[in-house]
Image (cartoon, rainbow, N blue to C red; front, side, top):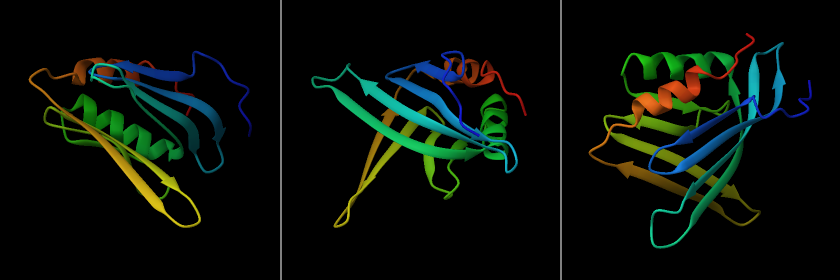
Length: 132
């Protein structure tokens, strides 16, 4: 099923960096969402920008949000069982990947800080208008 795009069907997080999970498609028979995921960090002396596209099952999305709300280690994984976004203690990690015919490239951005942004992240994911 193709999704036509609606700004209310995205997850926007502002913490030490900005990250947006934008719904591009969904499939209710198997229960999965397709997100374009964009991360920007302009706080460092240079601009960092990552983009990836992933399918995430409804079940894995719900488990991620449940773990966030329970203050457990939380990992958002795609259908290939790769970690996309994780929160452990006060560490936030985002993984981007790029494949070409010759190479595989993985880039990881990790934030470690004194401020726990979990409440902001919980609110962003909890306010997503689920239909499943």
